Image 1: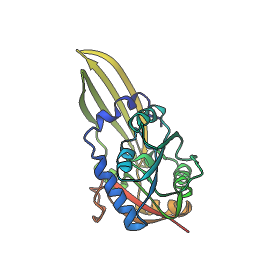
Image 2: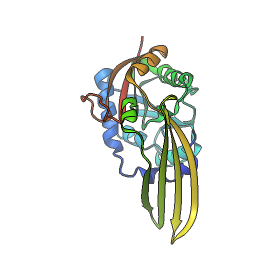
Image 3: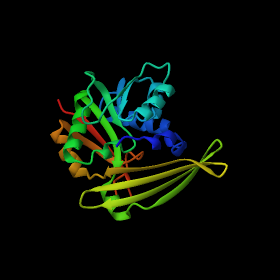
Length: 250
């Protein structure tokens, strides 16, 4: 899935997201399960807000994304920094470089719905890791999705003179192990509609044993899983967002 019209207001939707705290969380994990990272590849870097925080913390960074719209925002945000930003697909990306740390934040790996795509995406991470390097990503946790069920949501945001209304309508497919998330975004100004966008994003939810098996096929080993931003807590059916930590096999 390539973000198109949805990308225009992506940073408005997540203006309160604590990207700095998430960067600290990732670096702490990478250091716990490997060496303190000096460089990093962000798979699915979006508008670059995590990369900004990693650069602030002294890491040499590169990133790629399938969405040219998001990359344009990332390039503007990281203007003046030595960050390589290129278009690329999680399943096929190759830049002939290796890193101490590879990340894929904010459930990007969940877009790899087919098994072959999931393993290909994990192999992309593996081939860009030095031996012993660490791959960290977060995603929706299957037991929580099935226990809680995704719900329809309605959000309203202000962006200058614009009012943005975002409606999220999910469709759960427990057999296919995914959720189709239907987004409808309406932008108004002074009571007049100036833009309307509809997009459907199909997201895979994941289980621990499934990920251990997929990682094995990709040359990785699963070394830790936990609730997102809670490194020492146990996963439960209340854990919607799970963090997976994988290490490159020698």
